[in-house]
Image 1 (spheres, rainbow, N blue to C red):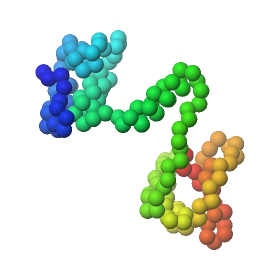
Image 2: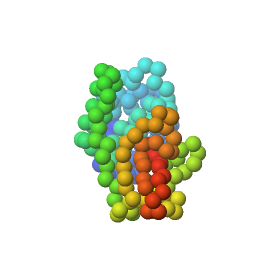
Image 3: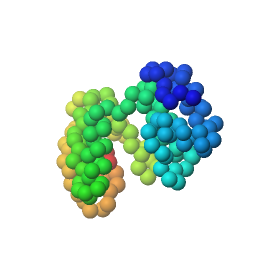
Length: 159
């Protein structure tokens, strides 16, 4: 069995992924050693081992994480060890026409971004964002506020 798959070989990748579920424990261990260069962790269960091997095969065939993603993950992992807050850039621009969907307590909320605001539940709102804490522990009426064009105040959450 090959230890790697040439980049872009979708057929070879599919066959290799299908073959993983047919391998016995010794073959899975050998495959792990070939792909990761070490013995598998103790008590690693078969389903998780197959997922990790599948990820590594896909990574080899299709490419891995972008460098920015790797840096973010390394930063997060380091923060877990020191128990300090993670500093990330949470400012992502939302372009007009984008549809934001969030499910909260089983209810799906859908918002369409407009050039000068957004549309929510058939009503048009202008952007007036500010962060506030009302101390109720969350809910759809936390962190983001908007003022409707009719002058009535409504609020909703994106987190």
